[in-house]
Length: 302
Image (cartoon, rainbow, N blue to C red; front, side, top):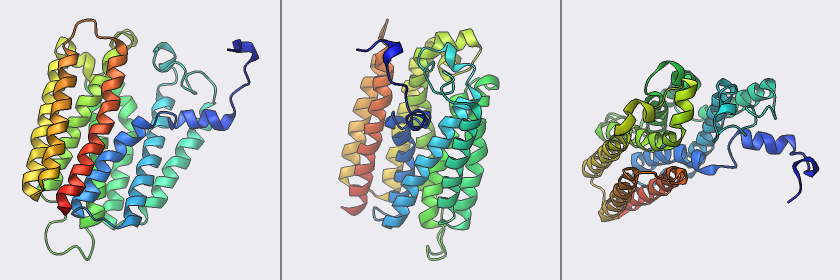
């Protein structure tokens, strides 16, 4: 390996790529998952392909904007946290001005995509923006900032579901019914679970810096809290399956998710758990989400 002084400097475009966190796709995909849950369930497993594309691109643009906004807020905190010290704004590899421009461009892309959607869905997109922008501030003033993040994730369900069901041709039934809110609640609890796990290895740094997190809030009961969040997620997803009359494929994938969540929760009770395990649990939840998505699609169609 070449010494640091002899390495070629990273191009600005690669640094912006890292600023958008596209080098770590798990965090981008995990926002996309509840949006896809919503659009496929609302359309009974067969949404229009163009709408799927809008949802996918919109979630990528929104999560990218959220990452940049988060790093702008935390540019003077991240250098003091082992996991975040090499982020472009923390390492001063990019200027604040560049960060602001990139964030505005990402929001502009999301706004352009939202124009394809119906009026209610468009305004839900607008309503989600303050939550996304203020989440990093919540870490400074609110004891459980992961709840704010979970609410932002919940908007993904409402936006995608309403994009299917709240149109002029959707019929006279309520466009956001019981299944919608059950899925919204499941997304809130799931996000609280996996993001509390994500925050657990940062507890010492966060405490020293005076930054709040659910992992700090629950303290020695953090593993218990994650267990409750995953259990609540499973119960609400079971209710979704019952309300919508989903087929056996959905129930099999839900059982698989429950088994995996149970194993993850048990690991959190271990003493001296290696820090890498928390990241593994976070990444596993991406695949749990896609597993459930497959079950939802097949459960609607079969």
